[in-house]
Length: 159
Image 1 (cartoon, helix red, strand yellow):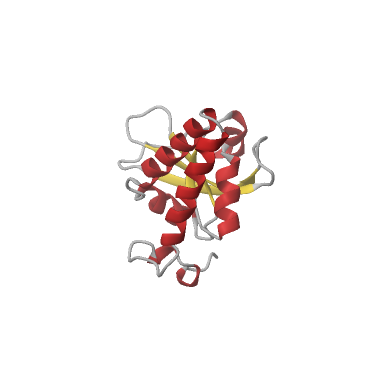
Image 2: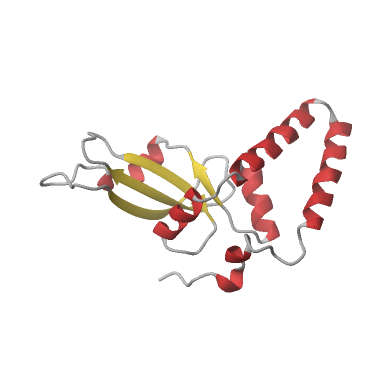
């Protein structure tokens, strides 16, 4: 969804959005996918990495954070990728993304409505855009308590 990234970046909003794994992303973390040497750990072993990645449909490279989890008794690791504009450490970004609640569901519902409107013709899409813009304007006031952690002045520095 390259247009989504552009829109959020233009507005100055931070984001952390899950990416589906592909061969290129898997290749970037291949060194983390090798089974750890020695006895299996009794608990989950997590490893994080971040790197620049540019999908074919993107206009520029973006930061991707990867999480690799080795669970006791499992032969293969669990792997996840998040594209983000947040300047925090990779483990913080993954925790933040995992606590996103229903925000992602609302975002996907909004995107689905926009896609349906595109197929219903330009007039329907223009009406939807007007509603979306009105809704965005109403949210530009003081941040709610839930969004306070995303304000740029309160972001912890990345080391």
